[in-house]
Length: 176
Image 1 (cartoon, helix red, strand yellow):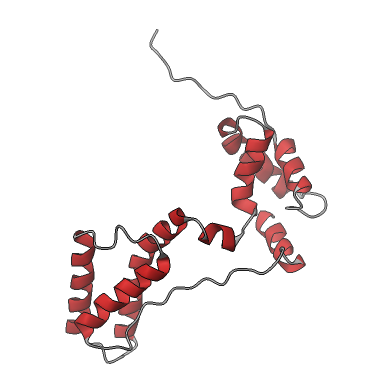
Image 2: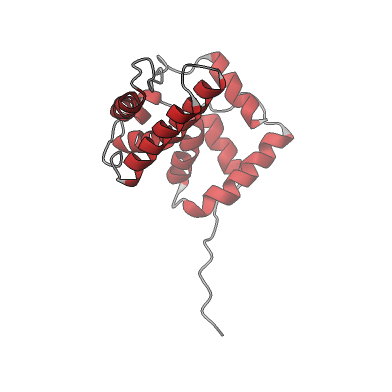
């Protein structure tokens, strides 16, 4: 007999997930068959990862609770946003080229090459703020393009106050 990895026991059911959703006002009214199936699936995936019901609720909170102010206040969030923003910079440059802006293909190649060089030298790796990342990439692009109109902007408006009835209805729709 070989050593097989231990299988995590799942003490949770779809009913537990549905109960948490109802307690936290993340679902409105009776669940549809599709929503009950989603709860069963969520219990199967998240249940073995949760030590207790509160831990399961915390995991579900990652899906249903969105507080932009809290999320953007975490350094880790800015680091992740900065990494993914680099791809968006290249996409925006491509759009500028395709829209016929005064950015020709040679200039575009120079900008992309410069950004790749900065990335390879890990010039952006220590930046922990998405705003700082946008400022740095803008400076690097403008240095190559010699065009002060070329820039990377960053900003996510934070929602004000608790979720509106419309937001809750959208979340209800997402689950169905």
